[in-house]
Each structure stands twice: as C-alpha cells, then as structure tokens.
Length: 461
Image 1 (cartoon, helix red, strand yellow):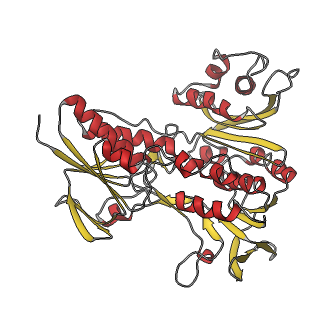
Image 2: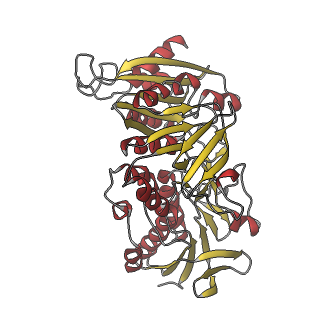
Image 3: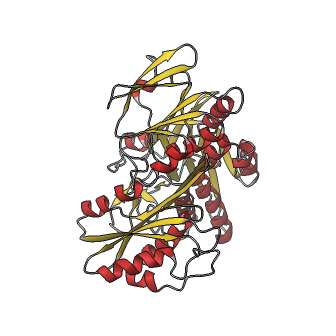
C-alpha cells in the first residue's frame, strides 16, 4: 500500500459525493490509500433537487424519497462526512481549509481539495427585509428546507393565491404544482415563458398555461413587495403598475455559482462567476472543482457556459474522483440538453431543447438556417397521438446540426435525446435524417418527428 492521501471535499451533494465515492473506489482498485473528508454546511446530502417541485405537487411522498444516500450511509462507505460545517477559508499554498460548526472553528489539511459548493438561488432585493431575511410568505425552491416550507404552506388548509416570479424550468414546474394543489396562480416573467427557446417555439407554451388557469404576465419585472399581515404580500410589476395579490410568492429567478471560497484564494472565475476547470476537473495543482459552482465547455461553441444541472454534476464529480485516485478521466462538455413539462388543469405541454438557440448561434458568429416542423407523437390514427413542434438549427455550408427545440404534447419531450446524441457526435442534419430509429404506430410516425424536421431543413439547405 502507498502513503495515504487526504482529499477534502467542500460540498456534499451530487458533485461532491460523486467525487468522494469515486475516489474511494478508484483507490481501492489501484491498491492505494485515501482518506476522504467532506464538509457540508447544511444538514442535507445527496438529494434530488430536481424532484422538489414534484414533492410540492404531491407526486413524492416525502423528503426521504428524494435522498440517494443518507449521511449515515456515506459514513458507512468510508467517507468522513462533517455536517453543519461551513468552509470559511482556503489556503492553497499551505494546503488547508478552515471551517466552523457548532463546536467552533477548525482546520483540516489536504493533499487534494475539491470545490463542489453548488449554486445559490438569486433573490431579488425586494424579497428581503431590512435585516436581509426573506419576507413572510416569500421563498425560492432550492433545497429540502425550501421544499418543507412550501409543503407546509401548500399541503394543507385552504388554497389561496400564489405568484410565481420567473418563467424558466422551476417557474413552470411550480406553477403546475400550485394549480394541482388548488391554488390560484399568477406567473410573472421578465421576457417570455421558457425564454431559452426561440420566440417562435416559446410562444407555444403560454396557451397551455392559460388553458389550465395560470395568469401569465410577461415582459415585465416584479420590483416591490408590500407585506400585509403575517403572510400577505403584493408583488408590483413595472410594465403596467398593477399589483398582484398573493398569499405566497415563489421565487424562480435562477441561480448563480457559489464560488466565493475559491475566489478569495485567488482562483479565476468565468463570466457567470463560476470556476473554470479543465476537462479533467482541475483548477490548479491539487485543486479541483465540479458541479453547479462551475462553468463547463460547450461542445458546439468551445466556450465556457453556465449550465447548472444534476446530470453534469454527477459526471464531473466522478471524473474528479477518478483522477484524484490515480486515473485519467475527462468530462466531455455540455450541450445544455434539458426537458420539463407543465401538466395541470387538463393541459399537458412538454418542453425540451439541446444545443444552441438562434440567438446563441448568432453570438457565436455562426451562419445558420432554422425551420419549425409540425408533426405528431404517434401515427395520426392512434388515440395517443399528440401535436409536436420541432425546430432544427443547422450551420450553412457544413450542414452541421447546431440545436433542436421541441414543444408538444405527452410523449414529445424526451425525443430531444435523439438530437442530443447527434449533436454529441457532431453529425449533420443529413445524418440525423437518415438514422435508424424505431417505429410503431403507438410510438411514432413513419418519419419520426425529429427526423422529419431534419430532413425538411436538409432539403432547404
């Protein structure tokens, strides 16, 4: 056995614990000794943040169902997990992390350190009082404590009026959850619902929300909050000066990287404020980063981008743990592939995208062609057939696939994975149109929707 190596991980969710356990597995496989210490400032570890809206909606029985591993299980598997431990200082030259917990201040030395501190919700100034605390009835949905707060508020008693601020993934999912709980819901967004899509695709989403009973207020911003009593609030939108009464205000205004610890130690940050690890996950000698505190290389543009998703965090953490234990792994980059749905009040719409939007392609200096194709999710004579709109974006000249967006009924969204695989392999729209995909009337049309869209764009090119 070799001399023991100490690895300190800051952050105990997807990226951090993936790194910790992969390092232990890799060391055992190579006959090496490694000590893994993990510092986590909260009392939660290894849970599905993406499942929180569905817990609030009532699809998930309780927080235990969202846990991948408990703190006790991590410790049983060899991780020195220290909960309630907030890292306060990082000395890269001397090789130690300072942290505080209920017992006071401490210091832990390291040979290798992994920064996996995640991302924090963006909270508008108007959502806090003069002391910096969240106002009554106002909260984001980012962790298990937030979920428990909203379960307590929405899970029992008489339904009230809610305002969701933000029209992205969490905003859409929380609007669904609130309607299913019987709450009257208004969604306020500064531009469009799901504005990561091109406008000719995102405008297809709002009618489904309106059909279900959501009041959508677009192209405006919530700028002030007037509290009335212990739980009342009024959100003021700037575009028309109107107010929207609410018994609860859900903040879905995005997240930002938590990178202050490394920044204070002199580590460089990207445009969004995230760390900039290389494909191996390395920031500097003996210093690594993974997960939502990082920016990642986009496989289409080659630029660093901020895409905080659990899929990336788990893969990046695994890469870092493998390399620290003596391996040679790399993270292949991101495409921004994502999918969600809104299913409430009789409406069902699925939304997905991968690769670049038209605006992103233009910013990257690419000459593009795009086309929206209408289709069905199954053969038209089948009862489960639903509409699906597919937008394909390709580069002129090379015919390289650049991106795809999907908006449609049940069964539409996960088709985005076909385009993501084609993008990963740097295929052309012609390649995508000719791929051998499965067909049977209950599942697809003879020309699968994504292939039909690719073929039609290829013909125009």
